[in-house]
Structure formats: C-alpha cells, structure tokens
Length: 290
Picture 1 (cartoon, one colour):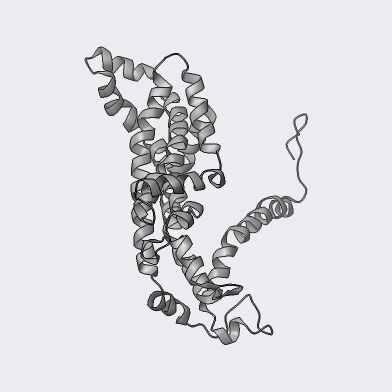
Picture 2 (cartoon, rainbow, N blue to C red):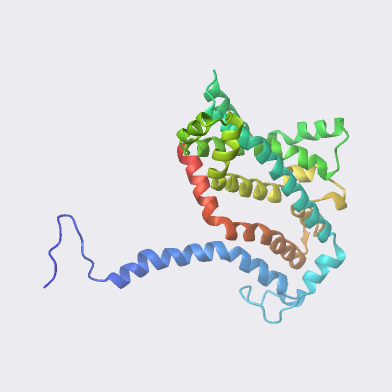
C-alpha cells in the first residue's frame, strides 16, 4: 500500500526519465560547455597542417596526431620566457594585492570611522573602472618613471585593479567572523594588530585564498596592459606573446596558437582544481555579507 501524499506533494510516475531530463542532461550540457574549449584546443594543437587546413577532414577528432606544433612553439618562439614572465608577474602582483588588500579589508570591517561606508563603496567602484579607460594614462605614467617596456611595469600596474577587489572581498569576509573572538583576545592582553594576526587572519584563510586565486587568475590572463606597456618579446607575457608572434596580419598559425593557449591555461586550471572548495566558500561568504 502506497503512502498517502501530503498536500501539495507530487509523486513522479517516471522518476528515471525526470532524473535524466532535469539532472543528467543539464550536467552533460555544462560539462560539454566547460570542457569543449579545452578539447578543441587540444585536437587543433595535435593536428598536422595537412589535416588542419583540409576542409574534408572532421574538426572533431584527430586522424594522425603530431607534436610538431608544440615543438614549433618551444623552438621557434620565446614561450618558455613568456611562461616565466607571466608566473613572476602574477605571483608578485598577487602578493602585493594581498599584502595591501587584506589589512584594508579588515580595517573597513572592524574599524569605525567617519565615511567608512563611502570609502568601501569608492574602493569597489575603483575596481569597476574598465582598463580601456586607464591604459593610456598608465602608459604615460610608466614612461615618465622609466618603467615602460619592462615586466616591472605590469607588477606596478596590476595591483591598481587587484587591491580594490581584494579589499572589497575581504571586508565582506571579515564581517562573517564574530568580532567577539577578537574582543576576548584583546581583553586577554592582545593589541588590535595582535588580534588580527592571531585570530582574524587564521579564520579568514578561505577568503584570503579566494582573493589570491582571483588575483592570480586575473594577472595571468590580463591582456590590455601587457600589450600596451610591454613590446619587447623577452618581456612579454603568455597572452600577448602567443598572439603577437603567432599571427601575421590575417593569417594565424592555428596549431602553435592553440598549443600555446592550451599550455597557458593549464596552471590556472590546476589552481582552481586544487582549491575550488575554498575558493567557492570564500567568494560566496564575502559576496553575501559584504
């Protein structure tokens, strides 16, 4: 005998069909949507030119895989140098953004002073200003201080849009941590700085990790500033170097281009795969409470 249904309750007559339609089908769609670009880059990078430019061949698989495009990328371009430059710029920019943004976020969350809400809003609005409006003044500033055409210009410029976001995210995350914990620590003799270092920062690790991952990703993929501030091949980052050296007017070296794009996306994908849980929890907590 079947259990009677509660008011408003619905019992499906085809649970497997509904599960396939409303669970597995959407998951399959999003999986194809997310993995599709990586698959396309991989098969394009593995195709020989004879197959790549033959319209009669299927674009969805590789008949005769080859590593010629990867070899060309490493031997005929400065890809290894670009990787080192990108890693250094992203790491230093992220470190600067965290060193400046985390204490600023803590100050906005814990300290009460006149105009604190306006300062917090102004910091976030600064992050929203598009780079297309700022890259020309930034080029002039870097030229005036003799830092143009070097990767150090990128290390200086990138924190200008990373610090506001880190500050906004961390201010929201610190508000999710009960201030009573720090008050108890201060009663026991810790200073405000000591309470921040020993109590707030360890509890804010997921938020700090989220801010660091976001900053690293944004620095790794940034294109406009890297294109305008750096012109020497030995100083370029991956996004600019791959585009500049592997395109000739309206002709594209699709094999090496996709090989470079694929290899350039691997570090970011690995970072997200290892820290996706902490990243999601830190980002949502900061967004909801901020």
